[in-house]
Image 1 (cartoon, rainbow, N blue to C red):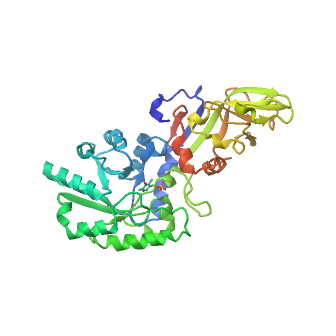
Image 2: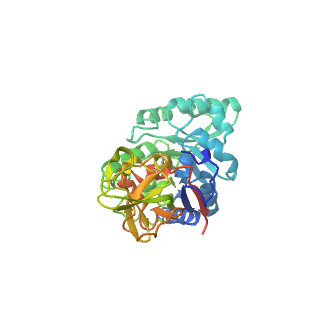
Image 3: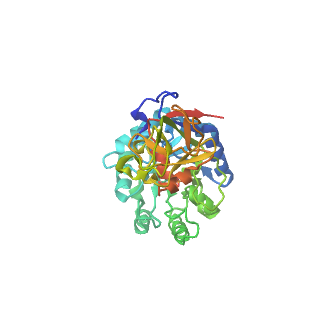
Length: 373
Ligand SMILES: *Cc1c(COP(=O)(O)O)cnc(C)c1O
């Protein structure tokens, strides 16, 4: 659910408090920069992975970032007016069919992902009588976006296809960068080198967060980290010098004590084993907390782990708070879902998904606090 769906609800009454540390975000961007020799961009698609593209871009621009990547044209259109003029805004999903004029009007630099997009952008440049900038995306083995090796060779043989275009970067994307041992990483690197040699004057943009950790061979002249900037870990067993950026606390609505045998929540799948103190929390799957947390998820309060009791509802979930002394937890209190006791990665693992999906799903009904400390 997008942040725009609701005006930022009041801190005191919102169902949850999402704290975003823009200082940590900027430090993470610099930490990535310290590991790479080329320039470092920032992937801010999907509303900066759910954290708010406006404040995220402002903080990163302040830290020195000038290359911002979005996926959809609508994201570029929303973001461009607030982005300082010295920033480049690159459209990863490329030009939607018929969207050339809109791309140009939005001041974006498309990643050209097919020969059709190359032709359309070149035609737009010629009809306007101006040079248009572009990234050229090559498919080096992911089979998602980008032109094939044969198509790249065709562009070299028939350079008039690129008329009116200024290629700023040759780019490609890694499919398995979160698995350092996966041989596909080296295969994609070899293919990238082979294809990039066709365009010797154009520098390369290759690595995402995981790719940066693979090693300098993968970096190219402009890296495109997303997840690492937001404090996400890409590879569980490898050190990455980033700090957490997000903290999520959920509001207690009600405390109740039930007796042995009481059925809790939808489907009655949780049955109280004895007298049980329950806390009902004001967030559910509509806020991005997946139903798959059932049976495995938990929140934390005063150093205690409070496991979920039963299913996640749309707007609420129930935890077993029996580990706390009576009266310790009251309506209005906040309990930790993501924070010092429970990482984003642990929540994702409990839900059977990845940190990316949890981050981008965090809902618009939380109060958002941007700290720049
Ligand atoms: C999303 C994306 C990235 C950023 O990936 P992270 O793993 O979040 O660092 C980089 N490049 C492309 C093409 C992407 O789609």
